[in-house]
Length: 285
Image (cartoon, rainbow, N blue to C red; front, top):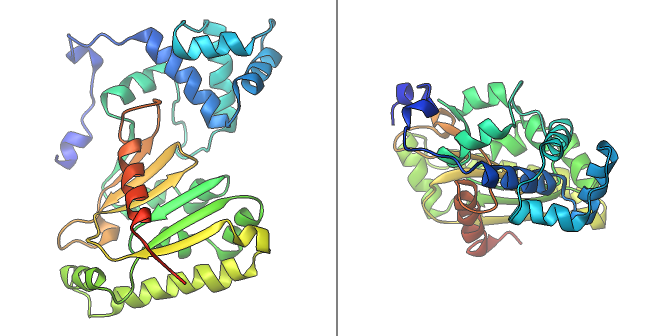
């Protein structure tokens, strides 16, 4: 797909056969709002009741997420909570039903950037990690975590309760050597950077944490062909960057994916890739 086609404005009016299931969209939007807050049906119902002039029961909330169509004022209240609590990854990024409708057509794709550097100019490491409760990241050297984000901040967020799972391409392994050849680097260049980043994460972050916090940091390596750099935040947000032939990782296109549905879309695809790599990892002992 060309850069020009990615930037083309898409109109739903061009798709005469498309008839969105508005009830299903509303149910998914309500469920996504609750999941984004990490709340049970009881807790979310109490929060909604505090914003409305009537009481919401957990049973009613559960039915609005599965079979019934939620009332309009409930959707508005849920939307306000998401806007107030969600990470501001892109200024003015909408989170309304129209966005979800378009997201359903484009499989959760929320943004496309021509390169990793363009993405990082719009979405900083602080935007991604400062308020995260769970960070899972896999790739080559993981520079966005180990170089673009300060050691002090990373130490603080983990100490405050964040879980961090990091998976590096094995330094001096077979496939990092293959990648060095493909990108035109001298042998050992990417391995040295990866080894440095692993040392930063272990010695300058994990080793300075309290024992309880240190248990929330997991590091592994894998020695397989590298396909993607994947960052998963709180089970809701994914940054995916493919590794292209003879192209440096920083020059590869970057996709911002926001999970909008309980099933389907791109987010589960990249989460499965991460999980599979993690299951096959070599432990960094």
